[in-house]
Amino acid sequence: MKLFYDARYIRPDFHDGISRYTTELANALAKQTKLTFIISDEKQLAFLPDNAEFVKIHPPISPLEPFTSIILNKFKPDVVFSPLFSMGTFGRKFKLILTSHDMIYVHHPEPPLDIRNKIVRVGWRAFYTTNIPMRITLDSADIVNTVSESAKKEFEVANLTKRPIIVTPNAPRHLEKLLDKLPDIGKHAPRNIVYMGAFISYKNVETLIKGMKYLPEYTLHLLSHLPPEERYRELVAMIPEGAKVIWHKGVSDQKYAELLADNAVLASASLDEGFGLPVVEAHTLGVPTVLTDMPVFHEVAGEKGALFFDAHDPADFAQKIKQLDDRELRESLSREGKKHVKQYSWDTSATTLLTAITSLLQ
Image (cartoon, rainbow, N blue to C red):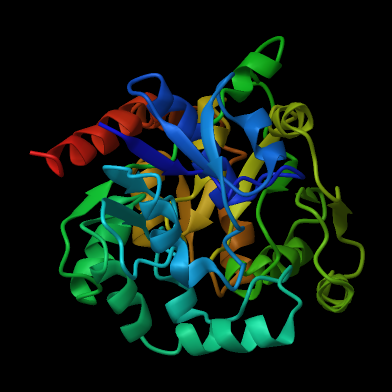
């Protein structure tokens, strides 16, 4: 079997969600079968197995992207797996699995903040105005991959594709390996609130910031790289008087682990997610989580592994944070979260993917 894996979504500067998913699943799958990686920048090889076989083509945002399948045909792959769905499928002569992580941009068509090109931003909005462009794109594959059962159900309800859907979830980084010891959840009630995620509107960090009005004894830590200046000023203006909010402007894995282990709770007020990777990462350390009350967070945290709040109610968020003063409650959340997160591993996801790949050649 000549299997190609599209690794062009790896960001050599810093991982976003798609980049990390691409990297981790690639390395897990490479342990189970032989792969040829599709790259667009040789710096991406640093994140792939040593001496990896590869072909180099254009980046995903290139004008050549609609012709990707025609370009790949000359290498004669049997199957191509892509961790996203931007790949042009016209003229393909191989089996194909495309990935859609969620329907977030159908619900919230705002382009990512780092896309500055006006033409690309207009095209982005046009693509996500209705389900139709995504449906046409996904139906051009043989199998559609996604990252959670919640996302799969949403696809089915929306009739997003006629193709079979498989689920290969994200899995947490082993942050516990970066610490000398795991945090003692029972020792002290948390006084640090950690947010790991982007500042795009659907992430709804506004609720966390506004909720600090009711939490004067707590500090909110915003870990990700700063948004563009206009968005940054907008969020700063929302900070209640006297509230403690720290902008970390991006952190290393080591710093991320240390902040989670420092008398902390992880929080998200997101309005939409395909998975929720920071949630499972916190749970590997036994750190409690306070999350939006929506199906995907119930899935990845477990019904007993988190406290859930109304994403539009800063006071409800603050009230759930204060509940963690109860030692018995936070120890229960820690225990249940650690138990639930054990089901997620990159090796398991890679096995699921390989089974689907093999089925295409039978």
